[in-house]
Length: 126
Image (cartoon, rainbow, N blue to C red; front, side, top):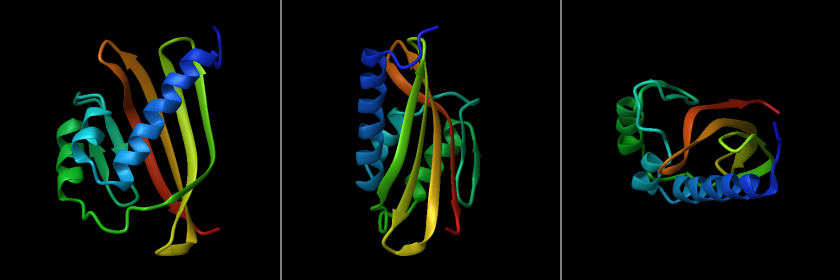
């Protein structure tokens, strides 16, 4: 199995960048499109456990649009073969400078493109 094929990695990096722009811009339609639409898709958030795309949609549509800007650091994207990748990053927000956020995503390639099938977000003290 080829790990970090440059072409595949560039595709996932682009999908990750698209996700990040949609997140901080509160582009709910794009955020929803980048998650696999399936009841087995899971997103564990900082304060919620979301099982299935219906729960993820409801969360995204109800979430306040303020305070979403953040700074990423130590982002690592690793691809496994042509169809699987993981993305890990740390983030900080101006409104909570004393906290470090952690985000992990599992991405799979589907006929319609790269989609998140599992995600986890948590916040810790530095």
